[in-house]
Structures are given as C-alpha cells and as structure tokens.
Length: 298
Image 1 (cartoon, rainbow, N blue to C red):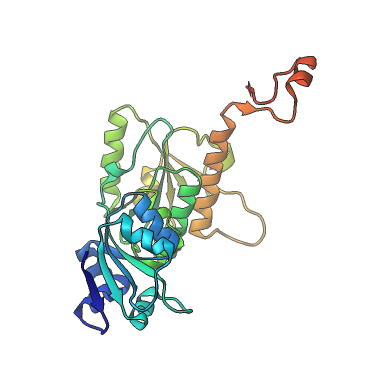
Image 2 (cartoon, helix red, strand yellow):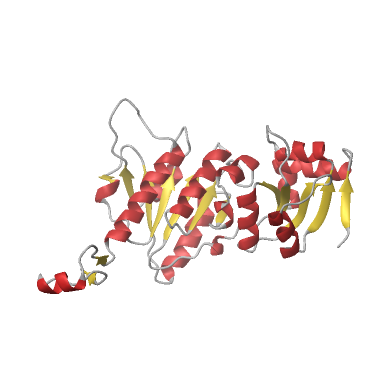
C-alpha cells in the first residue's frame, strides 16, 4: 500500500490538526483523532472504521504498530517527528501511532434495549472529560449505552476520547439534539413490550438510590454539571433518586455521581444471581448436609 509522507505543515497536516480543536470541521469530516495504544487497539478490535494511521517516519515501528498496520487497510501516513508530536498532544514527545477514525452514526437504535437494559443519559454536559469518564464507568458496570442530549460537549473531543481510555469504542455513545428524539425512541421500545423506567438523579430525590429497584430496565439520567437536569427531563422522569452523602460537600461531580448509580445498579443485579459457595470441600459439605463447593445456592 502506498504511503503518504508529511514533512511540512501542509494542507493535509492542517486538516488533521483541525480534528483536535475544531468541532465543526470534525463533524463535517465525520472523523476524529485517536491517541494511545489501548484506544486505537480497541477501535480496531470493536470494528470501527480506521481511515488513516499516522506514524513517525524516522523511527522503526514496534511489533504492536506493525501488527496494527497489517490488520487494517487504512491509509498510511509517515510524518516528520515534530509534526506527529503536535498531533499527539503529549508533553514527553510524539506517540508512536495516531489513528483517524470514522464517527459512528447518531442513531439511538445502536443502543440495544432488552429485559436487563441499563442505559445512561447525560443532559447537556459541558466538560468533554466528564463524558469520557462516564463512558468508562458505563463500560465497567455493564451499561448498554450512553446518550448525550442537548447543546453539549462533544464525545469525540480528544479530551473525551482520552478520558474514556478506549471504552468509547466498546459502549455505544449517541448524540441527541433534544429530549424529543429520546422520548420517541422510548415510546417505540415500550410499545414493543420493553417498559424502560426513566430515573433521574437529584439531591432531592424521592428515594435513596440503594432503596430503589434498579434491576428493572432503566434509563438513568445525569444532569448538567452546574444546573442539573433540565425542566423537560425532570418532567419526563418516572422516578428521581438521590445519593446519600455526609460531610460538607453539597453535590458530587457528574461523572462520580454516574459511577455511584451505575455501581448500585450493577450491585443489585449481581445480588439477584444465584450465589456460589466456596471454601467447603465436597466431602465436608455432604457431612454437614450442605451443597458442595461450586454448587448454586439460592
């Protein structure tokens, strides 16, 4: 495959540079820049379209980088080290490889709704880093997807992509202009027999999050970092829960609040599963009249 070489700040380099800081041009191109070994690897492993791979023209490639080039049919771009360092945004020099990845469509059908559905919605976030952190937590606690609504920060901003540590490629993230599109999507899912409960989070919630049943199909709402949930979303909530706190803090950071609620949902769901007894040999268990180790208990 032919290799494009970039040694000056030419038009191609400037186009790549806009993917870092210009949201409008990033959106028009429908592509974004990915930095880091793990995020790039996860993008490839999860089947995202890698359009270009950028690498240092003056340095031998590692085994990982050579394997990456073999696994994709992306455009190869060999860059001068100083230019690659600019795009890497690293204080300690250039990354070995950067990737230009195509955005996935903002289609709510990408988020699968099922009997055990656990979804998350972030209302008008202002900090891209918070989006990435929430995506990471959503991935860790088994959520099916994240919806970002309203006039919000961009999930494809480099700060968001970095904060997700690659989870952006494992968990569907869909942008929605307003609550209306989400309401229509929920109505369609409910009409097909999937009764998703819309549960908001607020310090004045009607119930402690640990006392609320989060094992049902649920869409959890996280509000704007400063203003909380919009009036439209408050009106659409079926329930509102709160996170109990002590000390002088009046609230939690949005990403921390999301992590707490996601963890509680995961904890409740795991608690409903049959447990496995451990530490009892089969012979001792039979003698004690118990189920042997490894068997299921209620």
